[in-house]
Image 1 (spheres, rainbow over the protein chains, first blue to last red):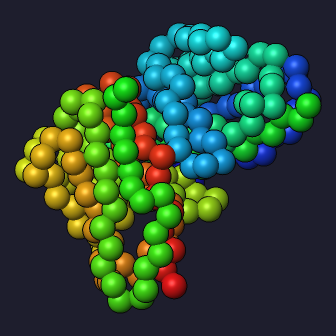
Image 2: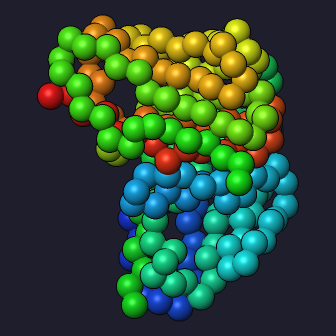
Length: 111
Length: 112
């Protein structure tokens, strides 16, 4: 079983819809990261959080440390949001330089 | 603008040849990382370096080598010992652990 599980694997939405991507992890963490990978392959860091909630534009990330769960929400989705969204965790303790990644969620937003 | 530059974007290699992937950052970050991405799998750590002249093996270091002679540079060599080198390779950096990570645009290596 992977230490980081994302759901769904694939998600198709219509422009304007509210989108939620989920991430569950099984290890103790010091931080959780949400990343965005566009078709060209480059990755952009969206959020790093260790508690609560963060918002940037139409993106909102939440984390529940007790339940070992995080969600990424996109409000008023747009075709340019189409990308792979990746959840990654920094384990707590001495190896916290080493991120563990989920397999990603492929989001397609149709006009 | 600060960032990470990976080159080349696409690389073709004949079996049995070593090849070096370049990664340069101008963010003054101490830590640098190499990841491998295969279809349907999460990124996996190959090597990482927390400081100049020091580096540690990641989860899949066999068949790879790195150097960290300068703070801004962390080249990755894919050797002929790597059994299945065709993959997408990503370089990243961070100021220190649990600080924001910056990723490069990647190099897609194909062995022909």
